[in-house]
Image (tube, rainbow, N blue to C red; front, side, top):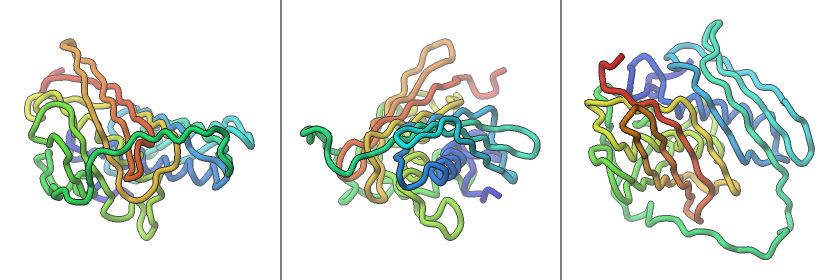
Length: 248
């Protein structure tokens, strides 16, 4: 059962995409096991995910010791509200190449102020589930942004969030932190989220270097480079449905 803290910015009766995406990541990770690394997770939201009891089911679509494809379905009652697929891969203990290239992270999070502001008109929301420290930008500013994010507590009661859960839950904020349109006049909802990871995330902090691009005719996308305190770990992508508030 989702807590009120899982609410999203568009509808007080619907969840922020990061909450169900994190839950799906948790279940897929449990199926993949410790031997395989989840390198790509793609989530499709089939409609608003309600603030109501939810159930996740998973299926190993393609088993394998080196690579595996896992599917997941999130349901509310008798309705599918989200579907996902993930690619898990084997990682070797010994390096396979001599490449040590790792793009350094943006400045922070140490030394940056914690932001307590929420872009939504109703509280609490999933924004409040995170400690947030801006490198550049802000919810009140339009344009590209860089932000460090850390879950304040558990996604599931009495359970420490895994690094995968942390990065997936944070990645869904890309379009929000780098908004190209005013929250009060427009919607820019993402019907999907894809997260690509080069390596496992280390530590609790995740940084998004996010940029939103909007076409005048109602579509767009948001792209985020993802970092931990050791450097870049991957990227996330969101397609965007754009409309005026009250549009039809």
